Length: 261
Length: 270
Image (cartoon, rainbow over the protein chains, first blue to last red):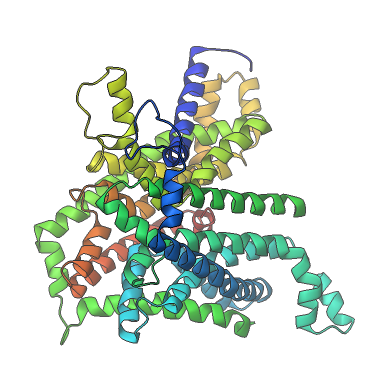
């Protein structure tokens, strides 16, 4: 195996370049956010926290941040129990219709997001949910459900349902046996699902563009509008913070999975 | 059991089935039934151009993603564990970064005063900044970047299951490394290729953020046609019809590919 043929070197070089292409754009925002000048210059100028101060000092950005976190938190609170219940039903039922229900719960991943966004906008316009907090949360619950369902269905596959049967035969109700026996054993997959639902709500952009407005605009909508006009390095600071948040959450999810595996 | 699934199902019915159904209804009904919106798609140049451009870009992006992604997935499936973790981490980290953040990063890298142009000018490779963004080139570069993990992950999932014994058996029977790769490994990895290319192609058909931000208004993909008809021209019927044609294309592709490999194998990657 330890030969350094030209073909092998070319292969390693090619792979390294592709991996660089994958990771560089994600990393480049960090030095940009700490730059002291408005325009990115090469070589990099002196470091500063200017753009972070700009972000924290700006009332509109702060309001958008509060909206984003409120929406993501509420989304997780609603999508997690709904998703767990549905995943439990899918795993424990032999009804043919459950297969169809399972497929329908995956629809948010299949339908192009622009179509979902415009469709929800039409419906919200009729019922007066445009530019409301509840409208935003509901849409994100729908978008987050597939992540919870997929993760929990996978978790239940490696769980032996006989254990729950034992608890029930000893007199526990189905509900109690679920919380006492099943849930503790699938909690890593529940956590993973809810973390992905949180990240999905935090990053969601297209639906928010159409249905949010006024004081209930999430960060991503303000970022998108700002990006269309000019390159504001404040966005680099916000992007760095958002990316750091995603990474930490994904890290938590993956270490939890390993512990339970 | 049905009762347990019904709250989630209700959310799906109200927030995606009903909205998409409404969209479809609006595309054919406006003070009476009409196919006018569809007639326009197939007769007016701007619609036709946008659809063919979207399919061309999606095809190009899928091809590039396969060319870049296959070697990466192959490397991840043959290297020792430590390297594998590193490669997969480098694929998955961008995957969980907001699409908007990545589009912004590409804008910063590719624009006239961006990192790449400044770098090349600093070292005297070019005199004038190159037009790398606000065109189809910028859109494709960023879209391939965003969709590449969707190619690598299904490929890796398939390759990882190819038993190493088969390759060794091939080698022991006198096959050269390239011979065993082309005759054994490649054919066995084809289900992964199908899953990855389908996912990337379909996601690219409906892509909105990157063409909107990096296309500079010249690369009008179908999703932008939908949003412009809603936001700028208030043409909900026209927007709906374009959306329906896009949706039918996506479902048709899934249906055809679903005949060869199970669909949850494709969607499981997301």
